[in-house]
Length: 284
Ligand SMILES: [Zn+2]
Image (cartoon, rainbow, N blue to C red; front, side, top):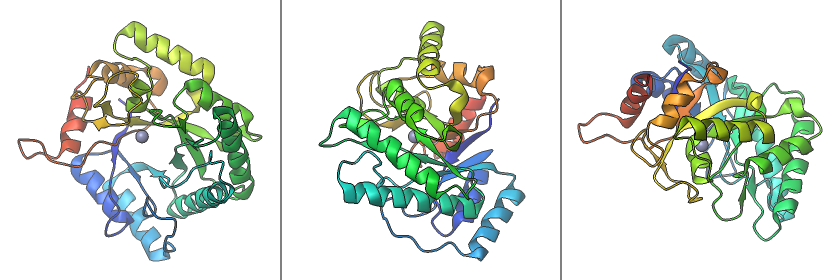
């Protein structure tokens, strides 16, 4: 069984996300290292780093993963926003590095008023600049596949593939695979045949070996809806079968997997993270 975790809040300190992860039974944790809807952020203090690291050790939570701000748009045709996004991503990597986090998940971005090809070229240019400016860091970006809302890029596997193929230094990038996003983008996983076919397509376009993390989310919306609405595991349009196959897939045994489902309680008063983890661990 791969390591399973969840995205948790850093309200009150980075260590709080670790404690919350432990409390619901996670092996690993994803977090924002700053407010995800603001460009500005306070510097991380040495005391905060120390608290975070000791919480990880004490609670035996491994594979901390950072998710970048939603404001970042590496595909923006607006020069000022593109420049700010590159700068923002470098800061995200520096903050992750400070906390000892090896990867920062980022959505490639939206081409908005530009074309798809121009957007992909801008993402490649941005990734090259980010790599050049973060060479001294161990932390690297993970491009996440998206659902394909509006002009968001990276929903087709070939778009992700083009971004990865375009960059100068391929060692400074990886991929985070989101199950809800892939399904909403039109890739089915239900039957063994669909599962096999989808991964064959992904491997050809992107490369399975580049996946360093999974986001495990069911989908409120149907296959190919291109709408990004996460649902609790087994409660949505994906159902349990895709997760059963994924967790049993030997190729992904060492890849940590994180829930990004709503933090709420079910009708029985149980935290949904607890329920979702139990459902996943119970799949055979
Ligand atoms: Zn995700």
